[in-house]
Image 1 (spheres, rainbow, N blue to C red):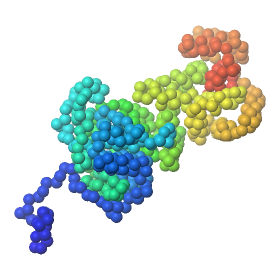
Image 2: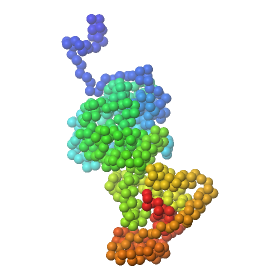
Image 3: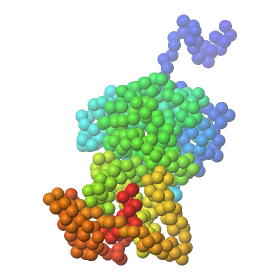
Image 4: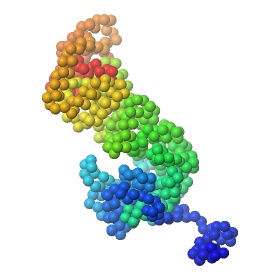
Length: 542
């Protein structure tokens, strides 16, 4: 009786009393302010720059918290690699408080606050609390982000026919912002100054139980933003080592919802694929994709990764990527994607060489085909594509270890990436390990040592018997007519004659063969020329 009296006095309802009306649970959850004594977060794991952003916003009179995956990682004792901040300040207000801050995005406007410069720079992403809106009440457009640009202009909340959110820039209070986030373990807000965690959806409890649970109806949430399907896989892969598992209701709709990804812009899928492969859990992510029945159909390049993940070269590259991320070392997307597409490039290259095409033109054409088939215009024509091409086209140049070619190659900006790629090829038996060891030694040697190494390579080359040069004949050529003569001739006239043979080579490549050899040119051109060199023998095995 006394307990009931006290409960009534303080406005508490008794759920067991049939006379008491139950209060409907709020769709935005129940706020809990959890102190450091309960959550145990070590504030020393928080990045100083993230602390500065929170402090600056609070000093200006705004709410500000570290939010999302960083709080989740802090809860389980990990040092987060990235820090995001959420605030009630608008993007324009945030931008005005920092010297180097930029508003980005149309669908979801946020602010990037930049600290440092060059490779040492760090980005703190700041988002404004979003209102929890009913997608059925949003403005609807017939197309997508690309086809409905004019229609979307000025809209703050818009969806397409499938319910995917195209514009989401209506501000709201923190409790509504929390309800809009995907998983309970990503919906916690941490104030590093007071060391209080604000939790609306039992995220701390789920983190302790190692459960990945979607906030709200999972099917509806995946429909709002299909990229959550990929994010779910990424989180499961990242947290599986810590014992995290999906709640049954969260994982159930994943496979049937996969088709919604077809309407997501290719550029966004490309970025999500990179995140999946570069968070230090690439192999675990691939295993999750297969386990969940999502191994194909998300993105063409990701299909290649899943299909070839067990091949020695790609598997070693993925393991190396995971290791580097774990050690806090940078990972270049161009290097990883070069490894992913290497089997396609190498196969096309070999086929062209068998048809009699020259080394470098054959490689360039194989690269073009791989880009067109697997990447298209997303990143294959930008800096990422340029870096990938450089890594690949360096490979035959590593075969030439005489003259000025080694010095020229060593000065290339992407030399280290090209060499690391060469070393992976050697480790998987694609080329002789001696070649990789030679370049490792040459890259760190003094000038006199380098000169001695080049001289030794020259003597070894001269001591080897020169392989006969194979020419492609015309189909109507007489059997055996002039075959030996063409194979043994090495004068410019012979080069001209070889260019006239064989319909298999395009006319532009025949013109390239007639060019006289420029001994003063770059090593890469020498590797693809008519003059026999070490590259001629080894590249055929590449």
